Length: 260
Image (tube, rainbow, N blue to C red; front, side, top):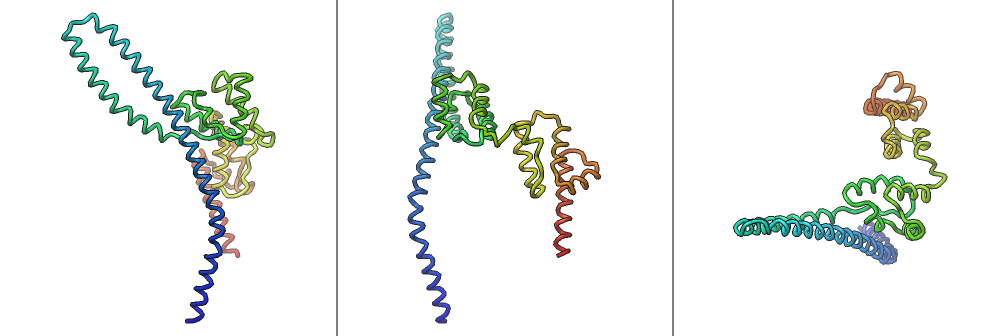
C-alpha cells in the first residue's frame, strides 16, 4: 500500500514539473493564435468589401435600366412594376446574406515565399471563383509580400499568367529543378503508398501530359524488383498497377515476417 502511494506521489511530482514548461509556451501559442485570427479577419474584410462593391454596381445598373423604360408605360403598368420590383429586391435581400456567409468560408491560400508550385495550383482553383490580381495581395506574407510590393512599383503585373511566371522565376530554387525534370526522374524510395503520394504531388501541375507517358513514368519509378513483377502481369492503367504493386509489396512483407 505504501509503495503504491509513493508511486502516485512520484507521478504527481512529474506532472507538477511540467507545469513551468507549459506556462512558458502558453504566451507563444496565444500570440500565434492571435496572428492567425488577424490574418483571417483581414482576408475576410477585403473580400467582403470587394463583393459589396460588385453588388452595388449591379444594383445601380439595374435601377438605371428600369428608370429609362418605365416612362413609356401607363400608370397601371408602372404600379405593377414597382410591386414586382419590391418583391424582386426582397428576394435579393434574402439571397445576399446567404451568399456572403458562403463567401466568408472561402479562405485564400497564404504564400510566404517558399514552395510556389502547390500555392499556384491552389490559387488557380481559388481564382475560378474570384477575380485574379484583385485580392491576390492579401495572400502574400513575409518575403513574398516584400517582393510583390517592390516589383509592382517597378513593373506592374500585367495579368495572372504574368504574376505566375514571375513568382516561379523568383521563388523556385535551383535545387527544386524544373517540374518536368523532377517528375520524370521520380523513383520509389519507401512504400508503394508513399511513392504514389509523391507521384500525385509532382503530377498535379503536369496533368496535361498524355496518359501513356504518365503510366510509363509511374512504372519506371518502381523499385527494380517490384517493377519486374508488375511488368510481367501486363497491367493497364494506374488503378490496376497500384493494386498489384500493393499486393506484391504486402506478400513480400509477409514473407519477411515468416522468415524471421
